[in-house]
Image (cartoon, rainbow, N blue to C red; front, side, top):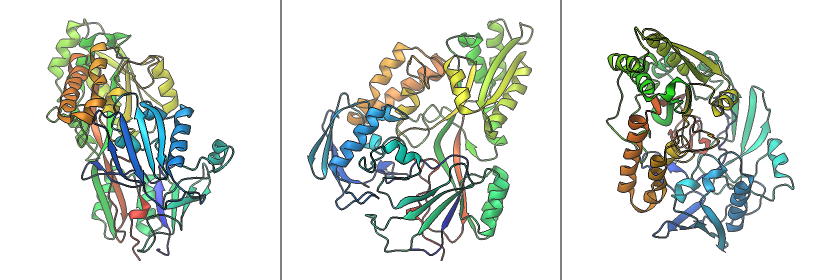
Length: 475
């Protein structure tokens, strides 16, 4: 194992995936074995059996076996918090043997993708403590991955320290990092200086200017890959002025999609359809273009626009999200020319979300990435009818769309070409027939790290994650 620690600069969010998932391999777009060495499903997609890796132990020393898998997932399902809904299709979990577990489903879903989720698919030792919630709140862990939590200073710059778990099933024969330290450094200028000086080994977010410097700097390496994170402008289809589809379509046409990509200097790429490239459901050739003449006609048909009544729209976005602020500023300038006043308000996520669930804005700007690497997340969570709306912040209540989406999980298992056709129809329904949203860009994952580090590969299925075990130290 390497003698020096790996220092990773982070933003304010605590890493959430300190585990060993059934990892989705980024280049081959398929699930690869990790804790499960193999799995199979019935022809109808309603029964899934997983064979587990032998000899795996939790950081507590207890074995990770079929009973432990059943106990951890059932506990997550009972909690009904966070992304536990990814297991909603599960009706029962059976232990078939020490290393064999079978899931019976109420309806077919791609359970191999569900099991690879970035949220709520954790396999952990439910016997680690009598009160597991309190145990985890103390900054302790009960997983089985290559590193275990040794120090958690919530809210501090030196927030998190991980240490190698000697009993990790993958072994420690080749050089690895003994220790991984996460530092919270919101100031990207300072983070870049830390990288240059070697005080940090890896920086996960740099603005376009600093990324360009890092790309040309001797002794540094960079990674620039498309992600699964999509910027969404969700339109209020239920109330207010945007209840009129003509106004929604006018705003769609007013967005300067190409200008935004240019303004953000390579940190984003155009969005085509609802589902980003690399996932089932992506629809190529749907990159939108600004059409101010078309926007003007639609506004005038609705009684607004140049020469008509003035129109006022309210937009909310994430406070501190610089790219979303650029979107708001440029859209406000564009709409002003069309006799539309855009009131843009940056808000902390929880406050924005609570306001959104009360239909408190006309345009809700947010980022979306899937819970697991499947296109259904973009539709089922965001555009399927829901009361309360949760993430359906365009407030669509469309039975035709709901019925179409209801076919997708089963088709994903049994007939992928048919699933793709359903996604294409759903994309047309959301963006054209209902004009419920505009998608200005897809984020690009841009990382910078010390040139001597080998083995890093971005995996878009796990945003904001560095798999430290895969990295080879520089010396």
